[in-house]
Image 1 (cartoon, rainbow, N blue to C red):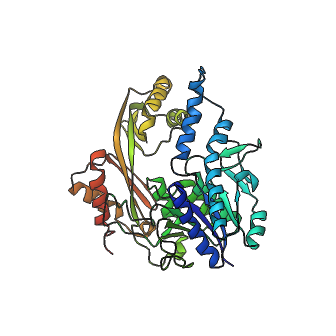
Image 2 (cartoon, helix red, strand yellow):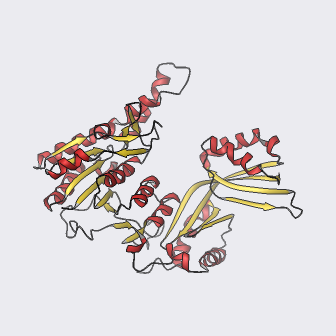
Amino acid sequence: MPRLVMKFGGTSVADIARIHNVARHVKREVDAGHEVAVVVSAMAGKTNELVALAREMPRATGASSPFFDAREYDAIVASGEQVASGLLAIALQSIGIDARSWQGWQIPIRTDNAHGAARILEIDGSEIIRRMGLGQVAVVTGFQGLAPDNRIATLGRGGSDTSAVALAAALKADRCDIYTDVDGVYTTDPRIEPKARRLSKISFEEMLEMASQGAKVLQVRSVELAMVHKVRTFVRSSFEDPDAPGMGDFDNPPGTLICDEEEIVEQQVVTGIAYAKDEAQISLRRVADRPGVSAGIFGPLAEANINVDMIVQNVSEDGSKTDITFTVPTGDVEKAVSILEKVRESVGFDAIQSESGLVKVSVIGIGMRSHAGVAATAFKALAEKGINIRAITTSEIKISILIDGPYAELAVRTLHSVYGLDKH
């Protein structure tokens, strides 16, 4: 009997009507004879409301510090998923499906002690497997687990995708279906390029790059888990009619399958174009070129949890000085510059320059491993459109290009076309 984990995000369970629609999706799979577990996010907007309440409380009580106990923060924000799971269990029971809700600590889903951004360590799925064998549907709260201090710990925003993939691995599920407000993974953002196509399959590695380079379809950690545990994952739309033709096709449902590259027979050279806005560039001018300089610059930034991405270094002719340019999220620019000013004397550089409002556009595809000239094609196409390239980084299956923000949409459309992604 096939075993399936179904995950529904906040927009899919936004109100009572949508929760009933989700129940119909679950009933379709149960009626087909599948063992089913469901993971749910909080209803759309509820987590933001709960976060706002937690942050407001210190101010409302006149506390001298805006900080609060992260363990209590987790207790507050985790309640959104608890409500959604209970409501879906009731909806399923009302249409004749045996179902019960499970909170993360009841399974248990064990995490580390990093409240607010915990990582899953292990899941004991034995009791859920036993009950699934009896025909019961488990409705599990996403985004949360049980920390070593015996308290609820949340996984950070987007953690319900991670919960679903981890549960699928623990239950040895045949597949994990991620239901969302889009009907699959596209070659690029359809809002920018109407000719974007839905992919029938994409490899774990490509999806990981797409997610980490700006595509919002799946959370990066969930793709990492799926790749490590080889969890075949489908991205599907919860807004389609649950009983429409093909929706119940277990082997080939509508959506995009994320799988091992061995399953993809015809590999494209380029699979997709991703982009990330709100990038900022920081340049350190005339840095002393000696051992330990890079550690002196990037070590303090890492300690402050500032994510450094693209790094470009230009060494002077005599080799005594170098310019180092790198990117950080726009929201971290001021913090990064402040940290670097403090280490200016110990590192040894003449000036700091920063600029916000940049965009990173990435060309992604496992076929790039065996094809030369992919980067040159991108550079030529952008040059013909008058788009200046500020920085470039490459990996085996990715080329990332930093450009000025106003050219983002033109660059995405240009690259999408030059690699033939707009052709069916």
